[in-house]
Length: 315
Image (tube, rainbow, N blue to C red; front, top):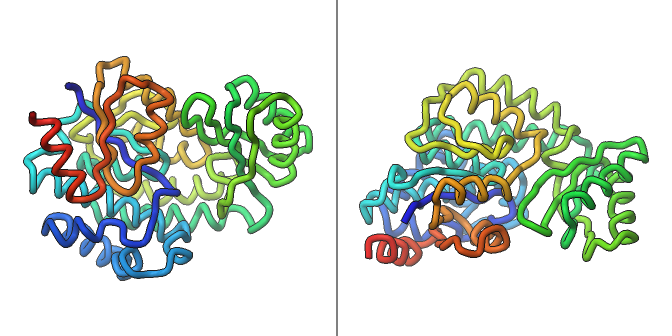
């Protein structure tokens, strides 16, 4: 068995996330306490007993999902003797890349929490509400998505492929009029389903340049070490351990495409057979079935998940 740990992005949040881990494992509770202290906010209280609308605000969602992911990894090591170094790679989807880097020791937990608060605020502020949009093109191939984006850009606006999540599951992002035009093109040209997404900003497109600039400034002041496990980066879909390359990739990632399909394919090509999705939900585990059916996926969000994973991997 060759293992990779993967870390989810926005959309996996829910009230109660991580609470059972904190109650069962002191190592997990310590993660939430440290994140609360770093942010000067009882984020854990919001996560466990708060309002979902407040939790879904990007500035809260990003550090919350990271905290859950890192808590799961700390509990896995403390409770079951499975450290991150048992994996051949780590990879995360969008903000999950920060979770992966923190779990692999490249960025401190406090710095990661603060960076994600800055990232969330900067991404929200980059585009005025209502001016940007995102849409999912389901059943589209890459050529169709590129053609849809070209139709969107004919309006004079921005329209980019934001996420290549899995075969037949592409997401586009840009100005609202351009996305509407791309959706209309898709519906008229054989794409199975093209639908607008309920998102707070148009992520991973050129409109996010102000947020990329903010992250460049924030990351310049943060210590980044070589991760204990190679990171498969969103923007390159290749492994990286060089701290300066990681820093540059994190900036590029704000406006760049999340090349998740290629990232999973890269890990499989290097011999990965098993994944553990650390944190909330199972979005990545479900998506990888469309990418590589032979991959054996496990979710690592609850104490029961960790126990089952430990039994399966040590058996």
